[in-house]
Length: 601
Image (cartoon, rainbow, N blue to C red; front, side):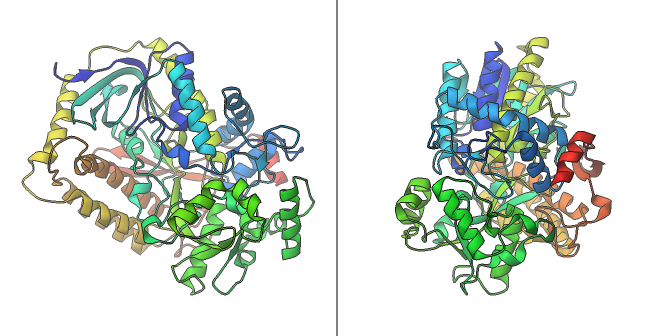
C-alpha cells in the first residue's frame, strides 16, 4: 500500500463543473484545504454547454419579478414534486449568486441602462435568464475557475474516482487512478462533495458530454446513500438531428426564448394544440399576439401580450415534437423545424452566436436564412442523490452532493436556466457545510487498507479476465436499450424488458476486457463507467416501473394520466444488500405561506 500515491485534504470535491468549482471556492474561503478532482482538464466541464442563461429573479427586465414568482414557477414546472425548501432557497439566493459572479468578473449582456439583461425561457412567467449571448456556461466556468485557482484550491486533473472510502458508515475519502498512466491514487478527506453531473452517456441520443456516465450517482449509492426521483429524465426538445455525427447536440432553448417558431413538415405551427389545458391561459392565442410578444422582446420593452406556445415547459414540448414525428409529420431526418430566420440576421448572430456557428460548421445551414431541424435529446437528470436542503448532506455521513448529481430541487421537470442557478446556490451551500464538517472532524491520514487493496485489485481485473467481452459493444447495447425502452414514452412491458436486458449486460460487463497499455486507455476507463451506467440505468427503469402514472418528464403510455395516489410522493432507491430497493415517501409539505404562493398560479 505504500506504493499508492496519497493526497490528503480537509474537503475533496469530485467534479469541476459549476457546482464543484463553487463548492471548492466556498470551502477554501472557510479555511479548509481543498482538493478538486476532475476526469478531464480544468475548464472542460459539461457546464460550458449550458448556453441559455442563469435563472434568477433580478427584475432587470420585468420589474415585477420576485423570488416568490420564481419559486412558484419552479414548483409548477416540477409538478409539485420539488423539495419545497430547496426550491425556496434557490429562488431566494439565486439573485445574490448571480451578482456575486458579476463581482468576480463575469461578463453579461446588458440592458440599455447597463444592468444585466435577462431573456425569457419556457415555464418562466417573466424574462429571468441572465446571459452572455448563448455562451453563458462558458463564462460561468471561466469566472469560477479563475476564482478557485486564486483561492488556492489544489486541482487534480484527468483523474477517475472509482470508489468512496468509508469507515463505520462514514465517507473518509476516495480512491481513483490517473488517466494518463493508470497509477492508483488515494484522497483521504474529512468531507467529500460530489459534483459529477448527469448520466447522459447511458442514452443513445444525448446532449451530454463524455464525462456524464453517472459516476457520482453510482459512487454515492455504493457508499450507502439514497437516490430519489430517478424516473424523471429530461429530454430537451431541441437537439440537432442532422448530420448523424452530431445527432443530439444541444440547440439551446434560447432560440425559442428569442422568438424561434416550431413547425412540422406541413408548415403547421403545432405547439398550439399541445398546451396543457390548466396552463393554456398563460400563452398567446394567435400568431398575431405571439408576434407582438416577440416584437416587444426584440425592442427591449414590456408588453401585455402572452408568450408564444413554443415556451411551454420542456417535457411538454419534447412530447409534442416526438408525437409529430411519430404520426408522420416530421422532417425527412426525423425531426421538426425550428425557425428564427424571420428575425433580422444581425440580431440572430448577436443573440445566438454559438448556434449560428454550430449549424454553419456542422450542418452547412445558415440559421439566419433557413430553419433548423431539431428533435428531442436526453439532456438532464432531475433525479439524484438525496440531500438535505440546507447543507446538501447526503444520507451517508461525510458525503455531500450538489448540482445535477443531487436530486430534489427540480421535481418532475426542470425549468430551463434553473440548472445554472442551482449549481451556484447549492454549490455554495455544499462547500460551506463540507468545510464546517471537516473542521469538526479533521481528516485522518490513515486509510482503510483493505478497501484500498480491493480497489487496486479492481483496476487490474479488466486486463486479467480470460474472456473477450468488448466494453464498447456492451455500452452500445445499453444505450440502445435505454433509448428504445426507457425513453420519452414508457410501458410496463418495455421497462420489464429493459431491466432484463440491463441484468444481462451487467453479467457480461463483469468479463469486459481491456487491451493495451493503461495510458489514456478509453476501453479500460469504460469498464468502470459501465458499472456506473448500468447501476443508474437499473435505478431509472425500476423507479419508472414503480410510478404507475404520467407526471412531468415521466410519461407512461399504459398509465397516461396523473394519479391521485402518486400526488406528492417520490420514489427512493437504496441498496439492500445485493439488490436495489424501491420505496415511496411523501414530499415535505408546503408551509402555508408557500402553499398560498403556488395557489396564486
